[in-house]
Image (cartoon, rainbow, N blue to C red; front, side):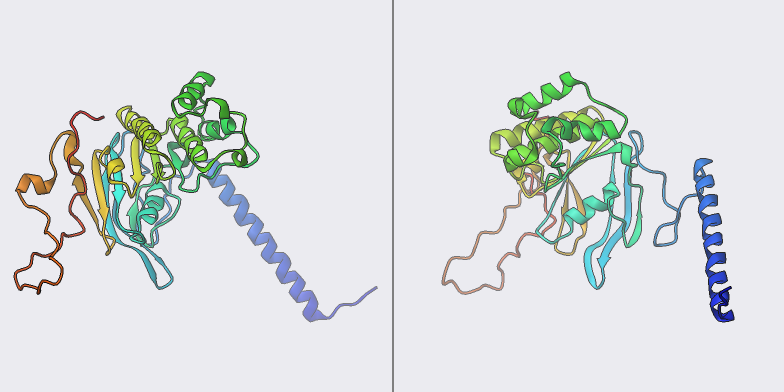
Length: 309
């Protein structure tokens, strides 16, 4: 018989007891989940979160921030997005637009503040880098979110959307056989076929020509009219003007909501009669009365034609 030191036996016994405690804890947690525990988990600020947003509940963010170590990616931001609203998020590079989109969608958590991000089955995405599965055809990629969300699309729906996006002959192609613009259109089709209450789109027209971009924006506009909340990040003023509202993220990452030239209305500048300052002529001496530059929170929407929905 092999004799082991008492110290080694004590160590093994301690490990055995710890394993039993962890197994008991895991089983208990699983049973609570199976019973549908209603106790909400608390956020990083210690407050219980609001119920997740859905087709009838607005998406609300209150004083959310995001930090990565010492780097502040998003300054305190508060906003509310109503069901069926089409919102465009704009701002300079590095201002936190994608960070804000990720937090609103639930892909990321805020460092502080609260947001009632929708559940996984209630959201669809158009990622800036497409995120298509390389082993699936364009058609299978487009149907994936709908299937996982429990709302499988019909073949006729897929065919109609592929036709409108110019993807008729692309259904059986794998992602590596598609151009960047074609991959982006498949990603758009995936979000549209999901028929989710929330669509989060990060630069959905960035790789598209003007004509195809207009078709994509028409689809997003139609989704909002059908009741989905559409939250879109874009650098393009023409794309933003299709939205109901523009949220501008400034250099300080503060959100400022502005009505996007409410379908036929003029911009805030035109309404007030103010004109943007003209650049000073070259070689001219600076004047003490030179007009200050435009603030970063002014509405970029200008000159929008009426009735474009």
